[in-house]
Length: 255
Image: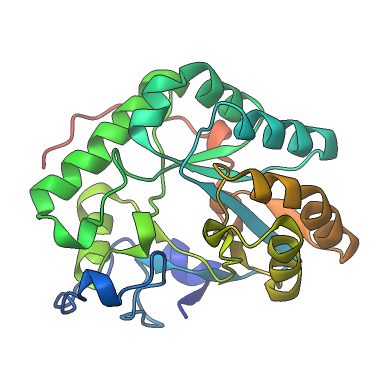
C-alpha cells in the first residue's frame, strides 16, 4: 500500500518513473482493483495518508448521475460533510448543472477520464487526450481544473502514474477501502464493509451511480462520524488547500 505522509506529498514535485508492468489478460483481471506495482516510495500514487488528525476522504466515482448524485448531495449537505467526486468527462458535459452544484456545495471534483477506458492499454497520447479533455470540461463548468486523477478500474501502471505527475502535476489517487459496491452486494453490506475497513487517513472508494451505494450512505456517514472520524476532501487529506480556495491560471497544455 502506498501510504504517504503529508510531508512526503508536499516535498515531492515529480513522480518516480519505472518500467511499465506486464499487461494482464482481461479475463484474468478483476473489474476494479488496485495496481499490483504499488511501492512505498512512489509519491505519484496515493492510496492513504498518515494524518495527524482523525480524518477520512470519502470519494465517489463515475458520476454525475442524474438521480443518485442529487440524493447523495442532499445527504452530505444535511450533515455538513465534504466529499470528492471523480467525474467522467462526458458526464460532466451532459450534466453541467449537477457538476456545478457539486463544486458549489464545497465538494472537490477530480478527473476520472473522458470515457472510462482501461488506460493501461492506451498510448500516452491517447491517455493525455482522455485526461485533458476531462480537465477542460470540468474547468468550463466550474471555473477550476481538477488537481488529482483517478484511473478507471485502477488500471494505470507505475510508469504511467509517474509520467502523468510529471507532465500534468496530477497525482494518481487510488484507495485503501473498497466496499466493492460496484458488485452491488446490497446497501447493508456496503455500509458494513466501509465501517469495518476505514481508519484514520483512509481514502474510501465508492460509486454514486448505484442506488445501493446511496442507500448505504446514511449508515456509513453517521457510523464513521460516531467513531470520531471527520470527512475531508482529497486535497485536504494530502495537506493541500481546499479546492474552492485555490486560484488557478489556465495554461495551454502540450501533450
